[in-house]
Image 1 (cartoon, rainbow, N blue to C red):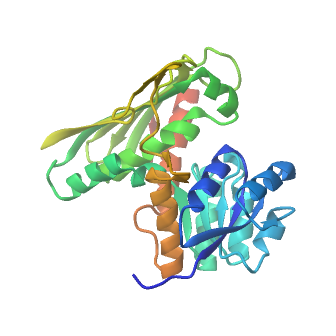
Image 2 (image 1 turned 120 degrees about the horizontal axis):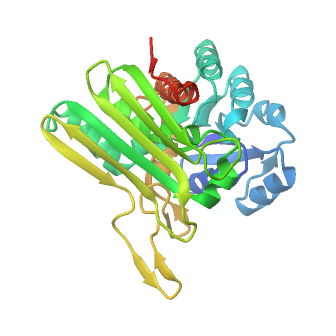
Amino acid sequence: MTSLHKLRIGLIGCGAFGESHLATLAGISFAEVVAVTDTDLDRANNLASRYRVQKVAGDVEELCALEEVDAVHVVTTENQHLGPVLAALERGKHVFVEKPMATTVEDAEKMVAAARKAGRILMPGHVCRFETKYATVKEQLGAGRLGRVVAISARQNHSMALGTVYKRTHQLLVCSIHEIDIILWLVGAKVKRVRGHEVTLQGGSGPDLSWGFLEFASGALGFVQTMWLLPDKANILDDAMQVVATGGVANICMHTGLDLFLEEGVVIPDISYEPRLKNSVFGALREELSYFALCVLEGRTPEVVTAEEGVQALRATIALIESASADRELTLT
């Protein structure tokens, strides 16, 4: 590979996952975070010091105006993506925006239109497409070894404690949009009908358990489940998917592979999404952020995941939420 200049990145949003971006990018030789900003500037300054980022911008506009920034990562809360994305694109920056792209389809479509107008890359953070197990199933389907998808069922279940943090946004948008995106990716057909169901047990503004059923134009069926009802001490990543196809079945279970039996109990470390080894981040997140950086540096349009596919996943997810609210099946046009 020919030698590449480093991609100079500005990070907007210094929360927990913003720090994950910083830790991951620190281990990518052809990327460098040159500026950060956050509504909590103390937090931004602390992370900048820890990860040796030279510049802390006072706000989004200041960061996006920096000439030394080539691309921007938007890692704000779920309903605060639109402003930073549009500001970055208007300044001619390429943009990586964490999932969900937005909390409304209208906002996501505004982002896509702005990216087209600016002639810049807009890539949504659908990290599961870069996880080895999911990507392998996609490759097997593409090669014809599994045949045609008949049905896919998936779950992503988390502890009650996570719900106290993320109930600011509907759990389908926080969690199941990952599985919905993968189901759309593997089926490769339009969603025809959806039916959503939800249960609230803990109080608050959103559900604690959600089910979603999807019917595709190809005849394939999809099912997703997510909940914030696992005991806090369960210490397990309960993510799984089963793909039933005409030529075989693929089972993906994300918490298998490594168990540590320690004095404090059983520890099941993440070895897929964001594993930490030798003071660096590996796994799907590193693959995803490396891919975005290379697409920008090499001047090529992302193919593994596109902004338009991010909108499709959001549209299906919002439809499930609306279906559950209306307590009826919805047909998608």
